[in-house]
Every structure is written in structure tokens, then in C-alpha cells.
Image 1 (cartoon, rainbow, N blue to C red):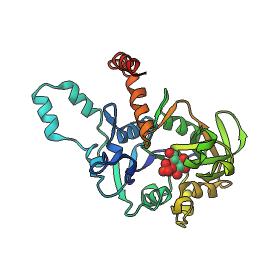
Image 2 (image 1 turned 135 degrees about the vertical axis):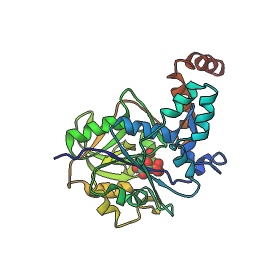
Image 3 (image 1 turned 90 degrees about the vertical axis):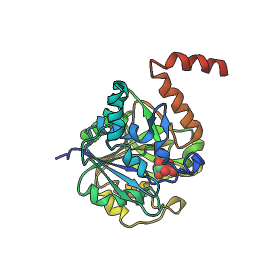
Length: 289
Ligand code: G1P
């Protein structure tokens, strides 16, 4: 029997050093693309995929992430008094059911694998999704929904993948590919950030995963890998053969918002999707290029 997917883990303990000074006193996941913080895109995408329970793996200075999903009572009553119904609707759309978000702390930055391991009590014996809020996906069907459907189809682990230029394999988790069905590819191996010469392919993992809880057994070894960090990719590699493992070439476009240029590109792409802004944005872009 395939267990339903209801849980998601969002690792948000990162220091955001690439965005200093913007991230000195605020969480990088609170940086907005157009008018919505990255964390909200991730939670909305997860909810659209049927996720009901969220675990943010946080660290110091990340309280704004939790506050963001709270009810801002004073703000709402002021808006109501002033008849600002549009702004109220924006806040209302943010509401998540009471008790659906929990947090755990990752006290030390020991890697993505360690962050997921910190959520072990939340995960328990259930399949779970992982969303890295830095990766933003613009698509017709939310990326995690595409993965959730692939999970129901295969009953195993599924990661979202995309081709990257061969000289960029050292930035990502890279797949070794067995049978390639076009949309779904069989994963026969995984390597974290291989040098181009050692990369088994140029199919890279983006920050969307659906994993079986068995990955926790491998994470529990807390073995260090690339960059001397506990790598999720290494633990996933150990699951190959235990259950089906696929990469999904998702429909959509991914923006690496952990990178300044990627973040800027996301602003433009998402603004151009907004009918009220698109003409003005298109017009000013023309004046620059
Ligand atoms: C992490 C993962 C990597 C994955 C990437 C996607 O790397 O370790 O396998 O390809 O996210 O964004 P990070 O970006 O944290 O270095």
C-alpha cells in the first residue's frame, strides 16, 4: 500500500551569506520575489500538493519565518477598520490551519542531510516531501504536485531533476541514470557536487524531493561527505535498491534564488506573470537592453 503524502520538511537554517548585507538581520527565506517571501511560495506549493503538516528546520534569527504564518491580529483589525479589504484578503490567503507548522532547531550548520535528520521525530514512519525555498519553480502544475503524482505512480523516492550545463555539475546533486523514460528516469546512483570530469550525467537535483522514511536510517550515521557536510544526497544514494528511485523531469522553469542573478531573474519572470504589472515591466526592460 502506498502511504499518502501529507508531510513536508523545509530546511531554513542556512545563514544566507551570499545575500549579505540583506540577510544580516533577516532570514534569506523572507526575501520577496515581487511581493511574496520565498518561504510563502514554498508553503503554498506544498499545500497545492496536498501537504497538511510542515516542519521548518530553523536556526538562530529565523523567528520571522514562523511569525509570517501567524495571525497578525492588530494589523488585521486596523485594516478592517480602514476598510482595506484587498490587503485583508492577502493576509487571509496566508492562513494555514492551526497547529500545522512545527519547528525544530538545527543548532549547527552541519549540512542538508543533518537538517533533515533534525526533523526525524516529525517524519516518523511516513513518506515526506522536502522543499528548499531557495529553489523557486514557475510552472503550470506546482512542481511538488508533479512529484507527489509521480510518487503515487511509483511508490518510491522521487526527486525533481533538470539538465544543467556540464561545467556546472559541481554545484548540484547529480544522477547516474538507468532506464530513461523521458519524463521519469530511473536513478542508479547519486553524487553530490561532482567535478565535471567525474559527473555521471548532467541531470541535477533541484530542491524538491519526495522520500520514504527509510532515508533516516542512513542519515543517522551522520557521515560527512562533500564539503565535510552531512549530505542528503549520500543518504539517498544508499536507498537505491531498497525501493524504486526516480528522477522527474518536471514541467516548468526553476530559478536558483540562492544566487543573485537567479534571484533577479525570478523577480522578472514572476512579475511578467502578473497581468497588472507585466506591461510596465516589459516596457522598462526594453529601455535597458
Ligand atoms: C543542495 C543539495 C544538492 C541539490 C541542491 C538543489 O545543495 O545538496 O544536491 O542539487 O541543493 O538546489 P545546496 O544548494 O544546499 O548547496
